[in-house]
Image 1 (spheres, rainbow, N blue to C red):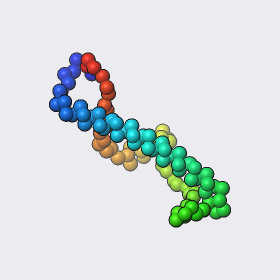
Image 2 (cartoon, rainbow, N blue to C red):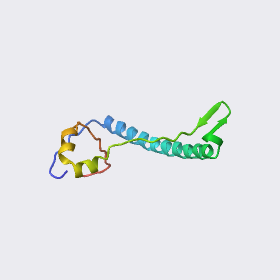
Image 3 (cartoon, one colour):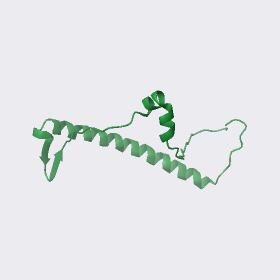
Image 4 (cartoon, rainbow, N blue to C red):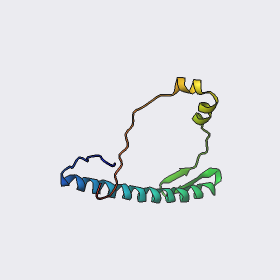
Length: 103
């Protein structure tokens, strides 16, 4: 961002950004806890007959299945003309927030 003038916004936006980043950290922590609980539940299911068990009012069944997915890297390398014919461009946006001073 050298030699670029940055737009300055009201101080209230700083609070919004701070809240956003705090929520993002909390979500990441909750997702990690959720993953840990899922692993424990899956381990219990794998040890049960037919991968199914009950716990209080809950019935848990661990299902295994197969998915077919297109290997886009292989297609791009092996058949670039086919890849180009079927690739779809979509517009996306990414929000980057960095803490810093003295831009």
